[in-house]
Length: 462
Ligand code: UDX
Picture 1 (cartoon, protein in one colour):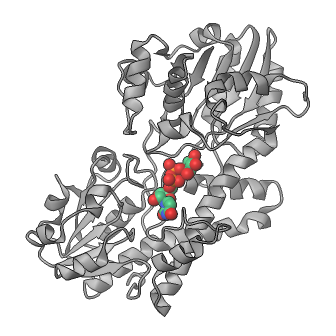
Picture 2 (cartoon, protein in one colour):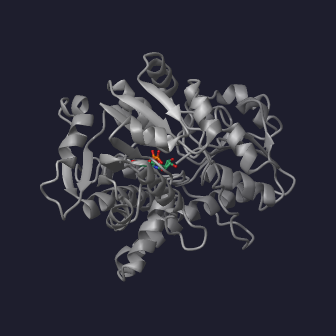
């Protein structure tokens, strides 16, 4: 089949490459010429394992091309996926749909005949109904249907999650129950569905809600264990052993119960805020009031880490050398949007610490957001002369660091495990003082200053 993917950020670029991998002829479209040039040359403008290979292979096979021209997209195919970003509005927290609306308006201006537009971006419930009215009003010389097919991919696993998803969800127009839109989309995913992947069709509103509910649930699960972590820190108790024990209950499950520095990235924080803002608009703000608490528990983890480091440094980090290992919001990603690691590094720096940051992939993005921090060449380089070493993102190379080897460069053997990913006994055995979020001896920060705003920018990402 022929199809276009409009918006080639994280979501769109992955979708375009993976649809070509399924054998389709795909045209990727974006307003950003530099991004399109890079993708057309076979270079993914962000780090995502395996995506480069899929991109290059499909460009070489002639199944995948890129353009900035929506008129070309309109004549190339009759199925158009939307992967345009829906970022957070700075004041209200609601989703900003400007780019999405602009893309749809411009596309339909070029469409003739019968077309299917399939949204993949995360949107507030009610968006499809609104967009469909606008499409109907503007499309005089075309018959255009709209469906919503939310994307659940995780960064770091984007290719695998797209080609082997847990489920495919498609929402269609409830006013046209006999539409064949869901069948046409099933054709796109035929190869995936043949593997037994559940194909769930529903109305627009339910599909829109499935995506934000899934992310709200995941965020709640993380904040739940981090709230329990706060209790462990004062009452004693090991939150990892606790998570293992409750996770054995199949109704709870162990995944997404890793306590630590909490969630960040371009999705979970913005999606729970947009969901709560939408509930408020709908007059049912109370229903999602708990999401504010989920957000607050999450942000408190950053303050708790700053407090832990200050306490371990006798009350103040002023003039201390602190190594922060990790800048990406999670491993296997170079994304620093709302990164807990980077927010903590910036806060420690504001409190007078000499902070040295190292991340295997996110150094460039981190330096663009917080240019005043020192960026080291390696974990060892960051730790040179350090009074405290913090593991803030659980990259495998940090998890497997040798305590003995790092001992030779630090000025004090203090390791702070903000992701509970290290073998504490091994570090202690090598003479280190080992501290972790979720164990006793975590303090709140000494000053009342608010934590700095988390970094948001990373414009090539959806
Ligand atoms: C998330 C959703 O998982 C995905 O389905 C959706 O499409 C986009 O948002 P992603 O942002 O890539 O994906 O990251 P995810 O793996 O979900 O992790 C989110 C954050 O939660 C990270 O900062 C991670 O470090 C943190 N996390 C995750 C925890 O703190 N504890 C956990 O147990 C799991």
